[in-house]
Length: 393
Image 1 (cartoon, rainbow, N blue to C red):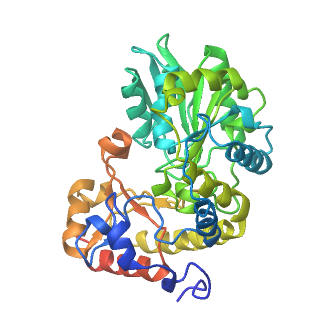
Image 2 (image 1 turned 120 degrees about the vertical axis):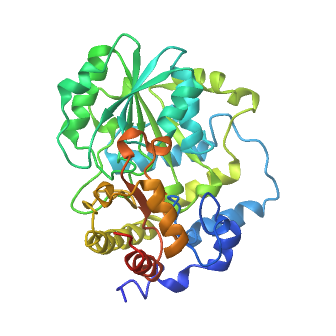
């Protein structure tokens, strides 16, 4: 048994009955009883007590009125304060807009800053929301293939920029590879954005989940980045608030905020973040730093445990990610497709994983599967036991 048996991330801290009723998106509520989901990047653990207490206290007031289009003043201040202190940046509240999830923000930003026929340069593989956002804006994507650790060929990267290119999409840290881009790499990306007058769409929703000895570097911490960086942040990965659907966008200045609010429809209440969800985020940022630190420590132990086990399987290649709580092992040498292997594990091992399909991550994901680690050690151990016993190679 792991040394987390006496803390808030031990087996007794999750309620599988509640998860089977509430955890959707390919998780407990959507799978046959007895199947373990290592699928969507959504923790099995309950949200911090301080968040629960804040929500209860707020509801005692008896009102859930409309909030300001850009978000509650206290939300914008909390976001600016927390991320300025964490990342060593000067992020003022008047540059922040509350959004109903980073996923929604991705689409809204693409629509606000791209036009039909424009192009966004993105990495491959990467979360499908980058291409989805571009598609909703009538734009296209160009993909640059990367791995978890290989050096980037910057000449090749630059060769993909053309007159239609208007934006670089950056997932920092990277989903699904777990790569944590370094400061020199971010400087190279910024240099290209400056050279070709491009926007940088920086999705940093995973930035709290970074393992020792690596450290997160925000794109906004790079000198000269603020005027062309559109930053996305959220609370779903760090604090288990996926269902609250709350995050924020940081824009270059207040004029960009006003323009974004106009284009998004927030000024007319057709777009915006729930006030109750903003209260949850404020509590998470202001009162849950110790909870988050313990969560990351637990996840690093989960990563080490799972990587060692998976590396023993025939045909599997895996490296330890620097960040995120997902693993992305290469199973191409097994002779099985990711879809076929995922279905085999679901049927015979009773474990659900995400196939590394082009639909979800781009063509660079083919030959991989993705597994989430955000559960207890007992559940992860049982899932890996089942996978090992039913490995078809």
